[in-house]
Structures are given as structure tokens and as C-alpha cells.
Image (cartoon, rainbow, N blue to C red; front, side, top):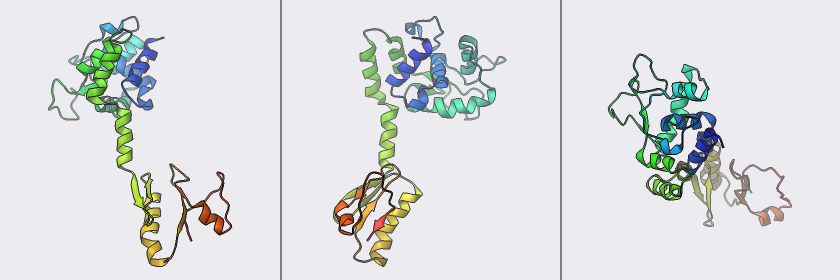
Length: 234
């Protein structure tokens, strides 16, 4: 297994989402671990690194320069924001790296902005392939959880909830379309369609969110998995 594949495996174990297990993220992780192709993971260490690096100001070595020098992968300098927003931001959220640990009060546009592997993540990395791996990984998860779980929790919190008059609870995924559907059911129907009954409503994440098959059948409407309905108030 290549170092790149091993880095992906570690990131997955640490709970990073799929988007942060791609090549760019794996190479960034290798840079922050200071692990080169022939190094062992036990040799990983904490090195504060900026995104690009500045030859004239070597205070914080650059992640992108490390990748180019040791993994022969060159990224354009204008891709630094992609590194920040789509890899490093999530690494910080997951507890894998700290942002500006040596100078916490740096402004966001400072050339000295830097990232460094957390001590907990370092212990996991150094234990990769050893009998301490599971223990260190469990310790990490106890402290930080996983970003996959955090994101799933956030999505759940953002769900749009609706309780029907019969007590049935429905959870819609967030979005303007579903806000409109809920408004029709809660506000429009009771006011302008008294005596109505909700027979079907679908969600972008679950097209069969609510189906009253018996109600539809009583109206002579058959329903199967290939049928397409909008909200149905009858």
C-alpha cells in the first residue's frame, strides 16, 4: 500500500468525510505529518506549516511546497483557498490539526497563518500499523468524535419538522421547496381547503415521506414505486 493510500485509510479512521479523503487531502495530511514516501508513520512529527510557504520567509514551511518536493504533485498557487476551505477547515473541525497554535491572535489574512497536527492525532498517526492503533484511535474519537457524525448531527438538527393532525411527525430536509410544502399543509390547507386530508407528500431526500395508500385507493388512485406525485391534499 502506498503512503497516499495509507494516509486515506488513516483519514477515514479519524472520521473525515469522503470529500476529505481525496488526493489533495491525503497529500496535505502527509505534509502536516512530515511523512515522506520512504518514512515510517512512527516518524511523524508536529510541524507548523503554512499553505503555500515562502522561500524568503521560511518561518512556516508550506504544505504545497512539501507536496511538490516529496510527492511530485504541483498545485497552482491560486488553489490555496481550495486547500483552506475544502481540506484544512475540515481538518480543524475534526480535531486533526490546530489553526495558528503558535500565534493564536494572527489576523485571517496574515502571511503567517499556519496549521499543526494536534497531539491526539499525532499519537494515532504514530501508532498506525502497530498494536497501539486501536487504543489511540479510540482515545481520539472519545475526545473529538468524528466529523462524519458531527455533520450528520448538524443535518438532523436542520431538518424541518411537521406534526400532522393525527400526531404523525414528518422530518423534511431543509430547502425552499419543502418550506413551501409545509406552509401549504399547515397554513393554506386549513384555511382554504377545510376537511382536507393529506394523502401524499414527498421530500427530495425521501420521495415516499408520507403515503396514505388506503386513502388513495378509496379514490381509485393506485400507487407504486415508479409513480410520481406532488403534495396531495384531497
